[in-house]
Image (cartoon, rainbow, N blue to C red; front, side, top):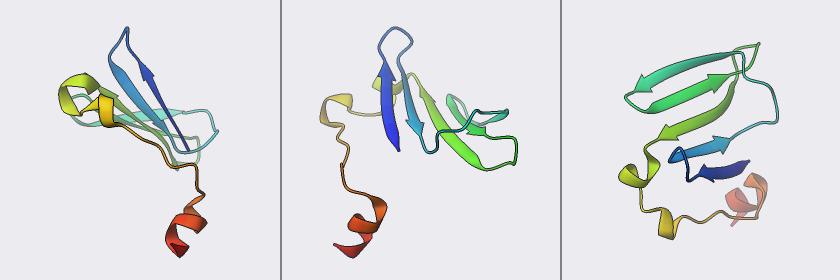
Length: 71
């Protein structure tokens, strides 16, 4: 998983997998889910991110999900 932020578009993207997205669904104004060709969730796009979250306190764990669940 990777999180990226584009300051120019004020878009925060959460990459859940390294697959190409084939379809998208805006589930709420400014929140878009991207799906791969098999329908699996590939990523989450949060538009106008600086208005929705405190980006100064955004952090990302470098632990795998297995390590987080075991903690």
